[in-house]
Length: 144
Image (cartoon, rainbow, N blue to C red; front, side, top):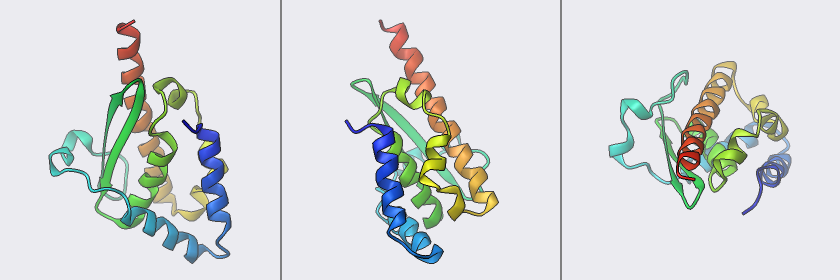
C-alpha cells in the first residue's frame, strides 16, 4: 500500500508537468472521464455530497480493514476532483484517512485550479469521505 503522502506527491508531480491552467483543467477532466461509472442504485439522496455545486454521489465499503470509495458526478470536472480524492484515500485504513488533514490537499495544490464554489465542494467531499472513515473506524473498534 502506498501511503497518502506518496500519492499526494505523485499527483503534485503530475500537475507540475503542465505549464498552464487550461492544461491542468484538461487533466482533471480526463481523470473524471476515466472514473469508473457508479451503479445507478448508489445514485440516491443519501449518497449525495451536500455543499457541492454539482451533483456528487459518494459511497464507500470497508474491505480487509481498508476503505474503498466509489463516486460519480453529473459534471466531468467534478468527477475529476473526486477521482483525485479517491486516488488519495481509497485503499487506506480508516485511521490513516482520519489522521490526515487538509494540508495534504494543499500540497497537491488542487484548490488553485478551482473556483471558490468548487473549492467549497472539495471540502464537502473530503468531509463526507472522513465521515465514512469514522464510521468504519468505529465498526473496527467494536469488532475487536
